[in-house]
Image (tube, rainbow, N blue to C red; front, side):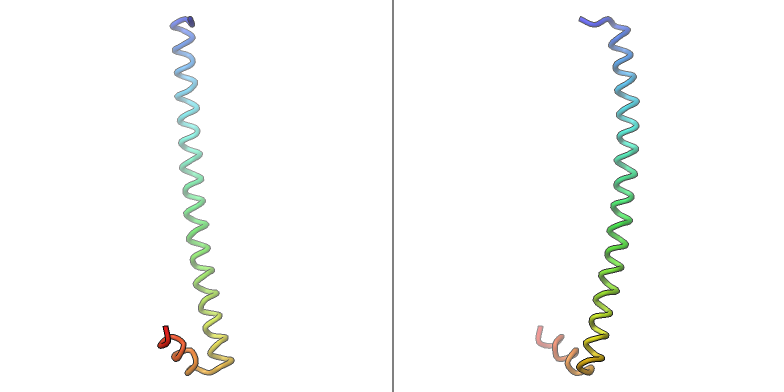
Amino acid sequence: MSSLKETMEKIKSLEAEKKSLLFEVDELKKMADAKATTLESEVSALREEIESLKILMNGPESSVDRKLKK
């Protein structure tokens, strides 16, 4: 059985580690959110580029026709 002093030190150490881990989790969540936002913008830009290229290649009618057929 450990002494009260050892138990208190262990609790203090674990609380400090928990605080550090929570901070790291929060930072990683922020990084993930930022990456998701960036990817959404990139995907949107690529979709717009594809649509522009289709219009350039086939004319605006085919783009409108394709949307109406959905």
